[in-house]
Length: 260
Image (cartoon, rainbow, N blue to C red):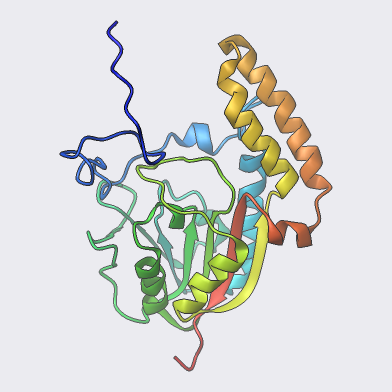
């Protein structure tokens, strides 16, 4: 096999020619399906077992703060395979929105990132692990604010300290304070901020991610099983206050004020 000559790179994005640079972020405006069985189910030895077991439970707890009443309208903004529909009663109007190409979405996000929905038309917005992938977070959050009725609430979760994971692109990471600032700049008032998976556990997760594929394939699952067990034990000994300062994932419940 002929090996291509190595070229200097100025970013962590794979090297692209000048011709391919921006337009080639291939179909970045279209939905790219995950494999739900891989990212929603924590099989023994899965390299993200603790993350998969922890995040949905914490999000369900926080979803209760959205104060969704019977008959309310809930927007899932970047719905993917709609993993969290069960957080809400069956009788609500649940609106899944995503990029073109997702067959489960009933609303397509426009090319400029905006939504074909009326102002003040929904009672609550869910946004789970989406914000780090959008090109313009300010536009995205301003749309959340626009479509919410006054007094409506947003639950947004996104990454703090996490490995690069394009889907199909991956742009942003936040501190808790930075995420609060983004939401306040969009007009929201913060109701609650939580860190999910603390610093020690996140540090070991990064170490695992950096070293896992140096092991022979037959040992990778065993290595991940051991690491995830230690990660789970460390995280159980981390305080909520510490997680709010440094976390793998941040989740915020924010409200659109009634006077704006």
